[in-house]
Image 1 (cartoon, rainbow, N blue to C red):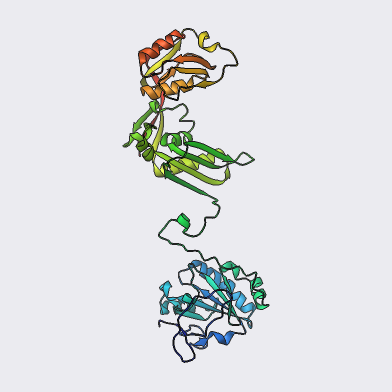
Image 2 (cartoon, one colour; image 1 turned 180 degrees about the horizontal axis):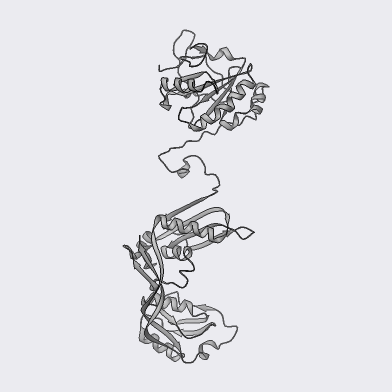
Length: 417
């Protein structure tokens, strides 16, 4: 049953097939092996006085089947003026018997002539998705549309000779074996209504976080750039992670390096920093965070358990707070604490929490602030914070002192599921 269509010249010889576009004239095409028609063979030129619509379809195409009732109503509405042929290309892998059985079972609902096992029309009108419709009037191609273009208004315009408003179908190439929209697969991406993605470290991109909100205060996007797993989990599981630093994490996971930061190591950053974005319809913050949390669990899958544990700590206490809390009100808020230059550290008009966090990163155990200081301070510290004796001496000279104690500390237990 193959080779349902032939293009013949005056001598009855086969001609080469060249793809056609809007405005092109059709060659003399003979349709063979037609199903559900008064004859099995007919020439398209017999319908030059009618608007012919070729409907490319397949038995397995749900969108095609949903369109048949609409196109059948058009066929009945313009009975003497249009002719619709269903064209099933050989590439659909539908068999002749399957096509015939399919159409016969549905004849009471709609009835079209069917061109099975087509090889020529699909070459004349190449397309990458179905349903796909070719409009022909007076022997010329006047439209190439998708299902939305097949409507009463367009049919009336076409019959009046006005083809300009018939929307052409986009010729979009899509490979089902590759990700949608990646490298143009499926065309240019439309504006995402809902999406989330996670990528590895990107060289040259600053680390950061942003949350996009509407004027009404609803959240619609979270973005993390070159961020650690701890950054992601800290936001997703707040307030459980409030004031939780690596020193207050108990790791029961196979790869603990993800939570032991080494920002100075490019190899570590390539392996353990990520870019994440979630975009969604506007909603309260909690619902947006729930999306982030769900995504993290899908990829990383760590179990988060808040708990209290007795841990060895350094405890910072105060003998005299006046020395470090009394300074001119116009003192500039600045510090070189984070520069790691080795120079003496100035910590001017700053809260205590950044210093405590930095000391935890240096010593890998919790630092507990029991000074009772709730205002910014002005401190001078040694350039090498790793030297505990120099640090203790410097603090002592400024009315503070460090002791080692065992304290019941709020921790997070992270474990592999």
